[in-house]
Amino acid sequence: MAVFGAVGLLAGFVACTDPPRRNPPQTGDSGNGGSGGTSGRGGSAGKGGTGSTGKGGKGGSSGSGSGGKSTTSGGSSGSSNSGGTTGGSATAGDAGDAGDAGDAGTGGAAGDGGEGNVSGDAGQGGSSSGEGGDSGEGNSAGTSGSSSGTSGSGGGGGAGPVGGGKSSLPAPPTTGVVKPAGTPGGFSVINWAGFQGAVSFTFDDNTQSQITNYAALNGVGVPLTFYLVCSTYGSNAIWAQALLDGHELGNHTMHHCAANGTNCAWGNAFVSTDAELDECTDALKSTYGLDAIYTVAAPYGDGGWGVPASTRFLSNRSVSDGNVSPNGATNPFSLPCSIPPENATAVGHYNGIINTVRTGHLWHIFLNHAFANDGYNPVSITEMVAAMTYARDLTDVWVDTVTHVTAYWRAQKLLTGVTPVVSGDDRTWSWTLPAHFPPGQYLRVKVDGGTLKQGATVLEWDDHGYYEVALDYGSVTLSP
Image (tube, rainbow, N blue to C red; front, side, top):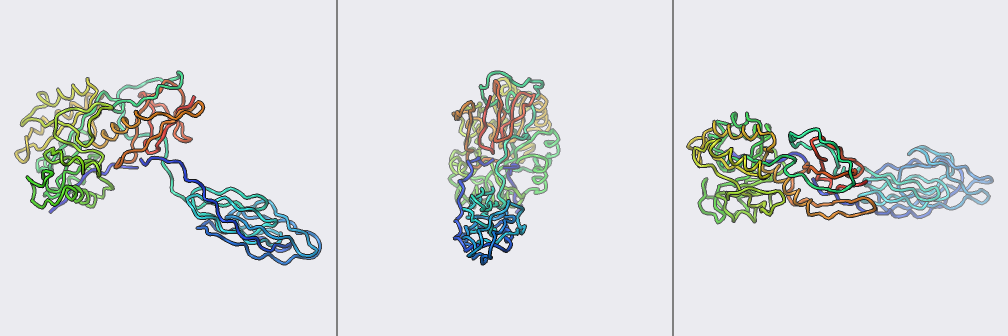
């Protein structure tokens, strides 16, 4: 039995959190220092522990030792004792490159840096330059200790979310909008990525007529969402190609049953709603190499699928008729749609709804099944293509997958409800994205004036009329 798949939207938004606090390393025990000898090489960056200093060289007679180069790599240096009977204390030389030998007396060995997410601060330095210990493991370098202590060198850490950049959202037709230069303020999210409204064309049940007519559907050049029943036969090659062409594959459960386990359309192996969703998701991910599945369509629009869907997905499409408003109260786990009557035409059904979306600034989801007698309420492929082409050619209607539009809509509602934190002349909006949110998503925003930044990145004005905010970063700041 062939297995079919759901959408794994490209790319990654975790909320950005403040960096973790530094964990200071343990200071090394002091050794017995002296004059004469050469300083040791710096330790290499690695996993730190708690080190103790080694024993210094024996003091020389007469004169004081001159400091050589101390190492810059390593963790905390131990403090050493003074020199021999007649010799003075060795003095530390200027900090040099890691591993360079100095000319001064051997100091005590430095204690290793503390282990943590960021490297620890270097310990108290001794009076002579010692051998550098291992640095603390982490993201950023530690700070130098006093006297001749060597600085801790951080190990490699993972990169955090990056602010700014450009999204893959389509550009609306408006151009030549001048960058606002008024008083800083007026921060708001633009509805539907700058378009008048949004439309998603969805196709259920992976019917043979969808496979047969895939080339015609794909030829319109707009992203589509296919909700696949994972236990049915079909052409894996077509759905894999659909992913390559930029379309979305969504979860329509394993056997297309009601939430109570009855009325299964493909097989009667229902165990539970959890199993129906998880087994289909696992099959789609393994078959098509997807990282995650973000959207599901409830079989029959049964409301019993809403709760289990909410713990696994970004959205669930029902079959109730209706539209979605920006910042509206629509439940994302019961998204409305419309099912065309049998043999519906573009002019008689689809185009009128698209016009309503455009003038009312709404989002509408079309639910289609088949283009022959192999599915519910079949329509002509010619009329389906005509309707999709009509929406595409309006240019001010956003035609995209369910996950892409859901992500924008849910993030807009989230950010609209955030109260900014004021610090001096700066205002910062911070957020935590909901569970199962796809990475790499953006919002388009506008202000009356000022400079928008995400971290150290100043956001660029786009003359289509907006700034683009990377949702993965988790905050945006407006400055004068």
